[in-house]
Image 1: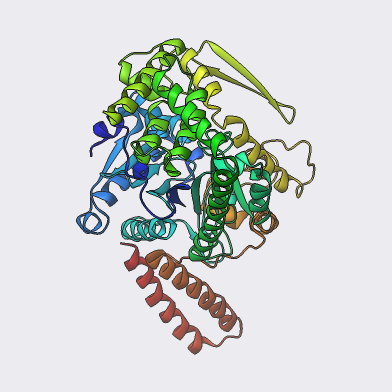
Image 2: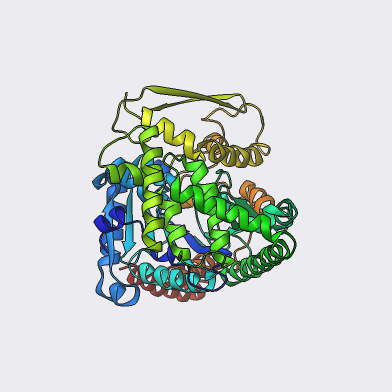
Length: 356
Length: 173
């Protein structure tokens, strides 16, 4: 898949709704921060330094040994994309919002299947990211580890004998590793246990965030849980403790869903049915409403109350209804009302498409 | 003025935030302003994180409430001053970690509970790190033996250092 296809198609491998625990755990992400030892960190880079870094990353990923090990990667400078296309990459979770600011100095490297991406000149010179569906943190770390080894053959990373990998922000120093899982927890929200569970998670030194990362609110009952500490633990320790916490949360979510089915079956069926009804018939829909209803629909699909909608379609719809995708589809900048109309139409079309 | 976010359309919305008594104005075009509002992209929380870190660090230097940008030591490699770090929460380059080492240690312990990496060692750079540490150690010994006028031993050490320095340079190619 080329960058053109990436910005034109919603689908990405992480939306496949495959992999362990995928009825609760939507996706797993591992990213590591790396900096070139010869350059100041990103926020102090001159334009020519920034270009040089982009160039060396291009050379490193172009190397034939690297291609053999990691696969075909394509580098795109952010300035080659339109603002809408850049925003689409954020909406697909392939890059962070940080890459949109000061974009002249920044670039993204994507593997064909969009599982691996490298952000160039984000807060750190390189942010290597791997995104997989379901609970696959170990698999994601293995891929990142291989990618890192491959890059290190040609690039020299800033590394300190006691502190490990050096990063612009001291919160990332050491392993530079941030692992996260995106969880869909409507059951725990409905039985009012979400606060307890998330409270426990933060006591374990993990951070809880909304769908679009740092500082965003949890919408659609989607929560992102990630490690806070990057120094003093091995990468495997960090990954394993997150796997264990994510597994336990998934188990409590499943228990919550079972309890709801046992004691309030009609209420849940009603909720799912209403969501499906509105999604497949409404003519005007804001993004907040759509996200809320899609969450109910996803719950219904995973409880097998609705069997004709594939789970990956619900995840794709979550991304498809974001503003940048709608503007891209419209082919021009449209008002927020026009977006609401278009959003409703798109959801209707997709949902009736699978029924027929 | 063009929009700070997309840097293409003209800025028509001027958002002013006041966080910790610091005022910041963001200039956005209409579309980005809507998106920022709608999606609630963590502009504000990100600043909070850095401010928070800066707070951890600025406790250590003389005046926690006013940290002039030019205050304190400067990193010889990138020119970043302690004051700048205290304001932004971001270090300037790898050498800053050595320059501000001791004070940063406290920051690391507060954030991570430790100040020692136990994870991955990069194969190539890791080897070089070890080699350059060994060279440093030998150089210290060389100065000691010269001080004691043990020239035979000094010559041995000098040759050993030369070989290792060649190795270090060779690996860098």
